[in-house]
Image 1 (cartoon, helix red, strand yellow):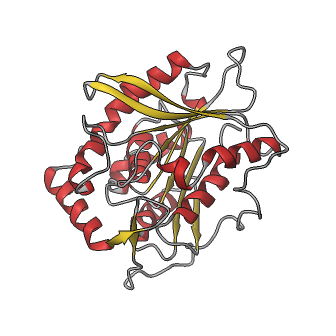
Image 2 (image 1 turned 120 degrees about the horizontal axis):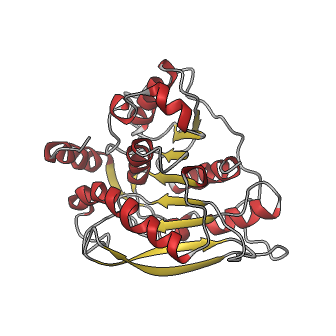
Length: 298
């Protein structure tokens, strides 16, 4: 299902109504809590708070590597960039699973690194034996020639839909050609925050032949209606290895994730629904990623 022009106008209007500035540590709009939102009995944490030091660089463990690479995007018609983490001891003598990690409407390929540090989280989890070594790919989800988050960031909203083809046709083939990876759904995960959370549900559930592990954090209004995301729940149950949806209970966009959870629950689709005490903010996204990483590729 494609989102209509009118639909994108609604998304932009909704985001503008919610946004009232930017945080000092992130590019995503702050989202006020909508006082009309009601929290139900299911809207509670599925995980405890992360342990102290989970996001701190440790000098006594091996560290992975971050590198910025370019790839030829035939979808957009230009060379584009993506940020790639390879785990400690990365070797072409073995194959690795890959997590594709998507940013929000105000970010780019550097957003996750700048305020949530997946490289630190995963280094620490791997060292503690809590996550498998994996590659993390952080592409730019704004699939247009000028993909910088500048000016009216909401005007570029349709480019986030175009990214579906860029991801499938350009990003994944480029990663699998350059790195030693597995090339099947069992070894691919898709996750993202805010606009990237919506993309994750739209593209991940729309292409379960490509992604078996899916995690959407604070999904934004670009998220398709639940029945469109999963028109055949019985078929989806056979393909999904893990589906995690999270949101903060102070996030004015929580109704979007609540709707997805309700649909999945109604159709008895196994999933994790995690609601913590945060807002539409970097703390929620970093914590959610910390919870997600140990669960995938097991």
